[in-house]
Length: 113
Image 1 (cartoon, rainbow, N blue to C red):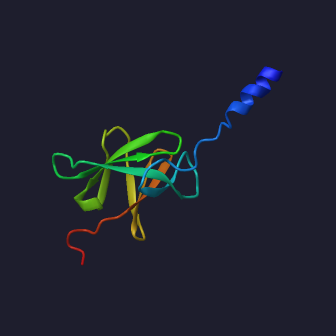
Image 2: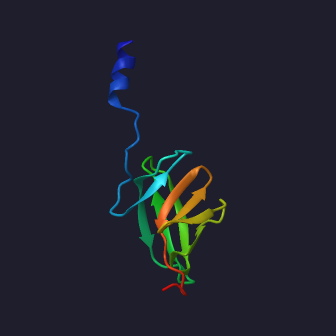
């Protein structure tokens, strides 16, 4: 019994509240209803076609790779495996992949002024 209590005290079992990184976006992971600025964004070099590639890191260590197309007006998963649904919500592009949702600052369409 003492061993179990000692082991339980070594780890709280709680995931960090926010992913490590300098830039964050709001996310609602694993079916959560509320968004929080807990996902870190890492911007990579541009892809061959000039679109931005970003990695969104989750607080629990998980991540997703996305390609921001046409200056951020459209988005796709970089590996192409999971289907992306996206819609404008105010100034943001709300992206859904499986049970995870993300809010990226949306780029303006090229013809918008």
